[in-house]
Image 1 (tube, rainbow, N blue to C red):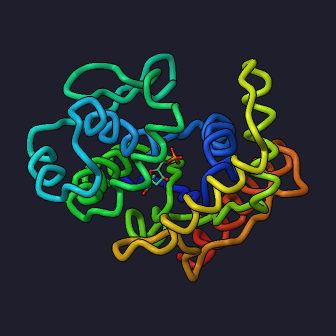
Image 2: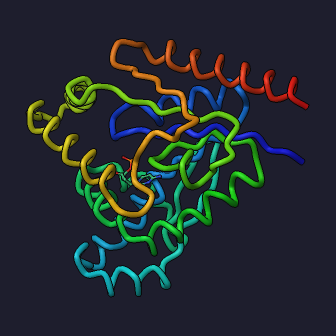
Length: 229
Ligand code: DC
């Protein structure tokens, strides 16, 4: 049975997960958050004091660690060696470690396997950095979702403010730019727009407008594909 897939790639803070969740809900697809998988592995490295520069230890630990996914009430849960760590991986420390450790091919290939298996079993909206270019090159729709670094920093700042956390917007923007550089310039499967991906810049758009745009593109793509057969 054919399963459909939508790949949403883009830099940190572009709104990928919020949008992907909305689109998945509307189409009754499963949302797969691949960043959470890299974050779970990063948490393992942090907990075990494995330096991100220690390639040997990182490679060795990839043999001992298991990342799995479960769905609870439709929400993705990420398990690290059987422990649900979904609520422990949303910190800046884990995000930075995920970005730094995801440069290693051994880390990526371990998780790519899991991601491709999920897409074989269900209709998915999958977000990440290289879903359209590497993980699901035959996705039915590829979106490259971006926004200016200052707009992404502003959104993050407001999110922190809402949670009562004080932050410096300039520092946040600096962090975002650094993360972009690392994600875009790594050697293996870097963040970049796939040749057949549609660019959506969300800087001036609401969440609903972006979700509606993607759903329209998807419906159009599927109609066009069916006409081709
Ligand atoms: O999307 P996120 O912020 O949760 O991702 C955290 C880091 O994980 C990101 O900076 C780079 C890495 N990542 C990746 O390399 N490939 C993916 N498909 C998803 C995340």
